[in-house]
Image (cartoon, rainbow, N blue to C red; front, side, top):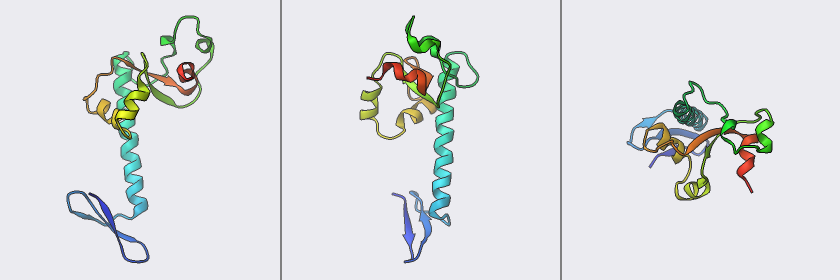
Length: 127
């Protein structure tokens, strides 16, 4: 398990899972982790977008049910992964953290039942 060594004033070294010591501070480590997570999220989004024939992720509001009120509104908010047939809450309960995004990015999960929606268009299936 990864941990930080503390000298009483500040964290001085980060010991990685493999036992190697990294001279990163806590802030540097968090910055690297944040960049890595963004990269995984973008890769997962691009994988889903490729299944729709797009080069870049975009809101697929045209997949909303016919005649839905929100279908007429322009996109607003950040892009999110949506389960077309529902079941996202159940998958989130069984898999902790951002494992869904990692599974998609590494090809361990099928993207047939997923789409990308903006926050506004995602509201239609929330209760």
